[in-house]
Amino acid sequence: MNLTLVMTKVFLKIFSRDRQAIVFSLIFPLLMMMAFGFFNSGEADPIAIGVADSADSTLSRNFIASINSNPLFDITEGTEESLRVQVINGNIGLALLIPEEFRGTPANIDLRVLIDTSQTAQMNTVIPLLQQGLVDVERDLRNLEPLFDLAIEDVEARTQTYLDFLVPGLLAMALMQIAMGGSGFNLVEFRRKGILKRLFVTPIQPKNFITGLVLSRLLIVIIQLSILLGIAILLLNITFIGNLANLYVFIILGTTIFLSLGFCLGSLAKTQQAIMAMNMLLTWPQMLLTGIFYPIDAMPTIIQPLANILPLSFVVSGLRGVAIEGANVLELMPNIIGIVIWIAIGLGFAIKLFNWKEVAT
Image (cartoon, rainbow, N blue to C red; front, side, top):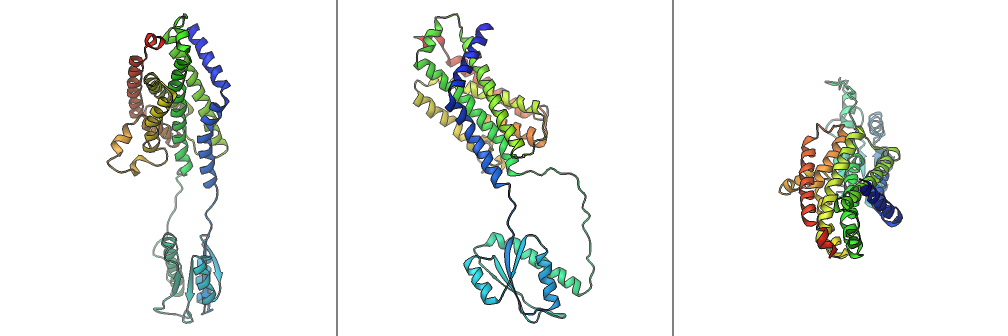
């Protein structure tokens, strides 16, 4: 046990002296969180609409006031000619032309709308609201009561932003990168520098070496992910309703998966170039297919079965279930089972492939 603790302290000192590794293991997920936090911090700008009121009647002014009361719109009044130029130049989204007949009790009057057909998505939002404004004006004109009202009951539903969805995935991605880099890369480097040969003739046994490396890397992952999570909660104001103990269960188990897989790659690779290629081959598909940036359900149906069984998928969905849904470990037992299976696979291959005597020759 003393030798294991000695090795743990040694690996922690080695990592603490590698400032580049400390910075770059944090900087990518941190930049991603800050970028999405910035994009989600502002409110949408109102849609600029031009109105040419040729009627200049009480009815037309009421209609314009009804539209203007909606915060989605920013009304600009002008002539048809000037508004047409602004639509062409892209200064306004559309121009509404109210004819002179729009007064008194009009019937079957067409209101012309000048639009840029390339703005399809915007028009799908604007046109229904304009039609609702016309319905409100017509109802007031005919003294008609609404058929029904909406009775709104606040059930305190949790609002979720894309950043809330993204952060657990980024934590899982950082976990994978730190764990994989801390096991496989170190193993290849220690072999290349002859450190394993020297350790082989000391009282240190393979279990002390591997356990010390695992404990040190696990501690590093916990510290770095705690920093990222703290920044996300305190500075980016993400929604986190789960229990931290449940979250760290998934962090520890997920780290164990990728440390084991890293040892497998480190035992197979003979050079740093080889371990880099193997690492990319293992991590990049998981970054794209495990629901970090968008739900697995949104992927092509043929890919979903494969995506659901990847090791990072179990970690991502587990962290997301705790952080966003407030689930506990028991409720996420399918994820735990999947993680344990991958740990068994990773450790099995790591033990089989790692041969201390063969490395030492």
